[in-house]
Amino acid sequence: MKYNLPELPYSLDALEPKMSRETLEFHYGKHLQTYIDNLNKLVAGTPYEEMSLEDIVLKADGAVFNNAAQTWNHTFFFETLAPAPVKMPEKLASRLADAFGSVEAFREEFAKAAVGLFGSGWAWLAEDRDGKLVIVQKQNAGNPMTDGMKPLFVTDVWEHAYYIDYRNRRAAFVDACLELADWEKVAARL
Ligand code: MN
Image (cartoon, rainbow, N blue to C red):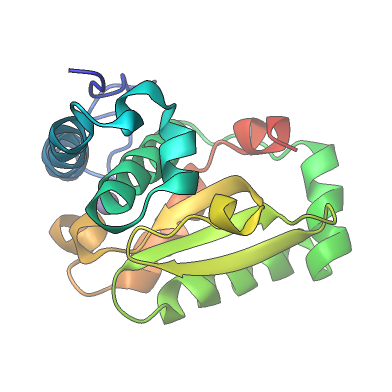
């Protein structure tokens, strides 16, 4: 068993009421666990067994890519949420202002990309090859690392991420994720 469920930096009910214990029990405890179980089965006895998770995401396709990227994406998503509001560090605020006009304009553009993504996927804030901050929509298990970008922040917009707490109100869930974001961790990735 190469991969195990990553530990959360908070308790299962710490994100309530924005994200309930029940959502964490299913999303983290069952959905993420299933991707990890599938990945362990798929890589066993293959050359992928010797690679890092990031290398698998960069090199694999098909089911191996899907389960590796879902493992990477969910780990990144959960570790970038915080129970108490985290003030955005100035260096991140100024980079967002450079790229989008203002922090508020970034939030609006990010929310629009997350809400407008058709079907299942992920909305990302990433740093592109030229060091510019960009918002990227990726369907299914997509991750901007495969485009040579560095992921900074992500919101999961698969229905399983929000249906328990928000039913069909994806926009309210996306707002909650922006409120729960640990901006210090995001800034540290710059
Ligand atoms: Mn998910």
